[in-house]
View 1 (cartoon, rainbow, N blue to C red):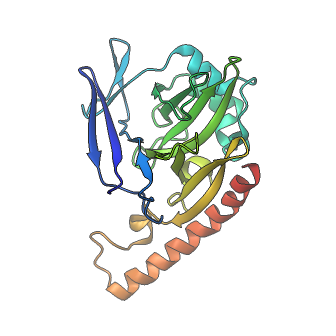
View 2: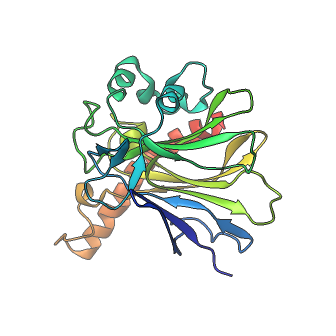
Length: 266
């Protein structure tokens, strides 16, 4: 039995489902007992509103603008969010004020199979509305998974970056909450660090009433141009390999301490 991702495309014509066999790099294969559910979206720098939705100029994906109360809940002091300590730059007064002008798009998604709770996938892009993010090429979407319980209380279940998010259901239904695979980019969680490239892949398992880190991998993805390797570089292969190692080492120096903080809060 193959494991699949469900690629969800939102358009003005409705929801289109297409199955693709794609698993985040760096992780062991998802077990055959897993059934993939929500997977990927793509995001364009400047959505335009069309009948209450944020329509992406490239025309590939359209996600609706989230209701105002959902956007409010993300930044409300009454919403429990342990990720504030690892995304400190996002929760400064200046940053939050600028974020109010960002388009927030997303969709409801049943993460736990519980009718008494409601979950939302919420996405925004700092580029175009936050001053320090003036380079779309290096900018990455920022994501939240927001949950409202039976008492109408909100909490942030997950906060991550990038253009992909994977949730995998346990086909045995023994575990209520989906496994999550997320990406976290230096450019978003450490915007003044050097280098401004590289990321971490993290696999999460829901235990003890929260998501906890299960696996992790540090990647120098996006560092090719800065460190001069790969692509169209004309340097000798040995020099490129050496530069690739330097890139990985530089990225690890930034990401490894951050991952320790992430594990500490989860």
